[in-house]
Length: 492
Image 1 (cartoon, rainbow, N blue to C red):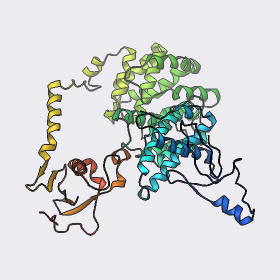
Image 2 (tube, rainbow, N blue to C red):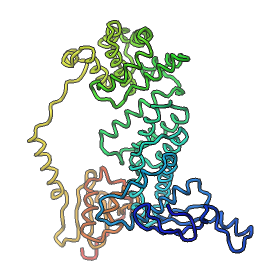
Image 3 (tube, rainbow, N blue to C red):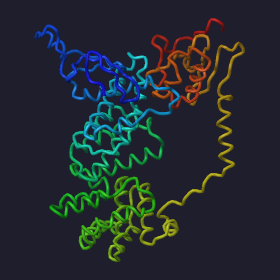
Image 4 (spheres, rainbow, N blue to C red):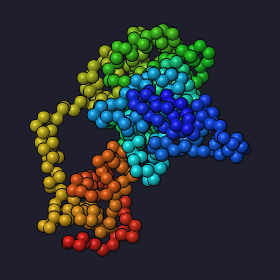
């Protein structure tokens, strides 16, 4: 690691020499000026040092050491052979585990700063992409984070949702819960995270769905949220748990923490194996008593509310009934067959869980308790759909005779694109549009330039306008041109 100085010595930690000019002395303190005066000391302590990406680092920044590693990393990435498929992660894996939380937070704050100053920096998106790759490496390193560190990382990530992948902090939370419990501060941070979660940076629809289900269950375990019986049947479980004390509460908390929102349809063997000791710790008598009480409303004939997290709780408790292997518990679980629900869309996963008690899916379908599984689409239909999609661009983009004007049919509007000037007009009201380049995702900005200076750039804009249901928010009305009469190019 380079040590601070007027000119740092070569650093080979990242595989290349990365001399970086800093304003601090070799010991980590301020370099002693030739004339030591109060004015010099105040100036040195207030001095901001520009980093390779433009970030301004102050000597007293509590994350200074972590930011200095990022500086060296950025320079090493600039010097790395482009033919190398990926950067060397070994320096980061060698980082002491106690420094990993601060290093993660420094990356997040750096990305946030780049986002705030995006319009002032030419290559802010490139630095963000580099830091996002590093962030995935840091989250992949096994380490224990303390509760305040997790709160800071979740809060910093919440500000960046839509810019970076959201999965890392939640993975850290699930690891943390294996050895500790939620706190009011963690729950508050998780609720803000959940409220701001966006689809843009999800790896896939399935991964985002899994993340949302995990969040549902984490926040269902929030012991400080006010109870609302009208929200879900499972509020009776939360109510009784909060009334427990001492060892009983500790044992039931461990059992409930094992419930999963992102569990598969069928009970995994590993889940059942880990559930057995938790069930034994609670005791069969206590488990029987609670299941009888919690499942009693199923026989009331009244329509019961069932939320998404409540459906996961119900499924998990039925799985516990299957693990218990007790006839009395099984009889209580079968009361579910007579339950009436207000929200039928959330019942399938809990009904299917009854298969662990010997109730077949076919029987559940026959009793109209779950929906029948839809057959897979025919391969010939998928092939025809693929061919139709491939033909859409030629149908929805038309050139005029002179070749300067390109007419694009979007999902919501028609557009005119002029190759000679790059001008974009919305046909319905003749409004002139311009691309808000800074609003584009970073990966897209690698191929879409600020200016439409080539045929490829014209085609990229045409593609986005053709799919204006998705990309319209990246085009804004040009000031002074809203609804104006159409202005033709000089060649038209």
